[in-house]
Amino acid sequence: MAGNTFGQFFRVTTWGESHGKALGVIVDGCPPGLPLSAPDIQQDLDRRRPQSAPSSTPRREPDQVQLLSGTFEGMTTGTPISLVIYNKDVDSKTYDSIKDIFRPGHGDLTYQKKYGIRDYRGGGRASGRETAARVAAGAIAKKVLDQENISVRAYTLELAGVRAEHVDIDVIDQNPFLAPDLDAADQMDKRIVQVKHAGDSAGGVVEVLVQGCPAGLGEPVFDKLDADLAKAIMSIGAVKAVEVGIGLAAARLLGSECNDEITPEGFATNRSGGILAGISNGDEIVVRAAVKPISSIEKEQRTVDTHMKPTTISVKGRHDVSAVPRIVPVCEAMVRLVIVDHLLRQRAIQ
Image 1 (cartoon, one colour):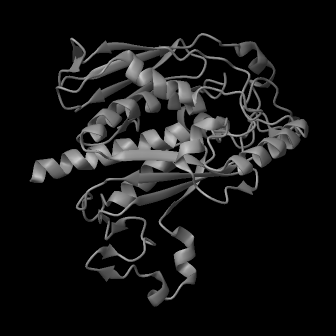
Image 2 (image 1 turned 180 degrees about the vertical axis):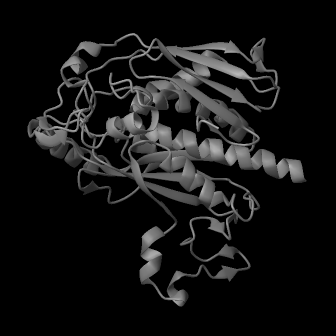
C-alpha cells in the first residue's frame, strides 16, 4: 500500500502534484442513485480556492473539475467515480534557484530520504494543492450525508493568535477567513497583514461540527470513530494536532468534571465531543485541528543543500501566509469521508 487511498467502504484515491499536469481523485463505493454533476463538486472547490484575504496565495487556479466516470443521466451508478482538475496557473521557474536546497518545515528532506528523488516544484505530492482532490471527494460524500440529514460545517476558530469569541454559523461565508465571528475576522485581517509584511506566516485552529449524526457509528477497537477522524484530519499536511470534544483540557479535569451526565432527555453536556468508546452517541460531534504556519517564508533560515552542506534560504514565490482559512473546506471534506465510510459500514452489519 502506497498510502494514497483512504477509507474501507467509501474508498478515495487521490493523485497528482502541485506543478504537474493535473490532480485527480477516484471514489469507489459511492452508492448508486444519487444526483451528481460537476457543479455540485465545483461549489466546494470554489470555497477552497484563494480568496481576497491577505493570507491567500496570488496563484489563481480555476480548479474547474471534470467528471469522467461513475454517473449516467446525472445519477451515480455505483461504479468508480473519476474526477480530474487541470493545473492552469503553474510557474515552476521560481523553484529553480532552490531545487538543491531543503526548505525548513517542508517534506523536501524526508521525500528525498524515502524515495531518492523528489519533485521540488511547489512540494510536488506533498503540496497543499493535493487537497483539491480531497475536497472534490468530500463533495460526493456530502451527497450521501444529505440523504441522512447529516451536516458537516467547519470554520476558522483561531488565526494568528486571534480567536473567535462566539460561533455564528450564518456568518462563516460572509468573510474571507471563514470565521464564525465577524469582529474576530476583522482582527484576523489586521494581524495577517502584519505577519505578511514581516515576511513570515501564521497558524491557527479549525473547528468542525457534525450535526445529525446517529448513534452507533464507529468500530471497536482500532477503527474507533474518533481514531479515524484523527487520522483523517492528521493526514492533511499542515495539521499538527487534533482534539475531539474538550480535547487536551480533559487531562486537567477530575472525572466528576469531565463526564457527561446522562438524563432522560439526553446528555447534560458534550465534553466527549459526541463520541464515547469510539462510537457516536447521537450528540454533536466536535473536532478541532491545530494548523501549523506555512513553511515557505521570506525570512532567512538556516538549512542544508542536497550534499548536506550548510546554507541559508529565503523562499520566494506565490505562497499563502496561512493555510487557514483554505484548509477549512479540506477539514470538512475529510470528516465527511469518515462519517460516510462508517455510515456504510454500519449499514453492512445491520
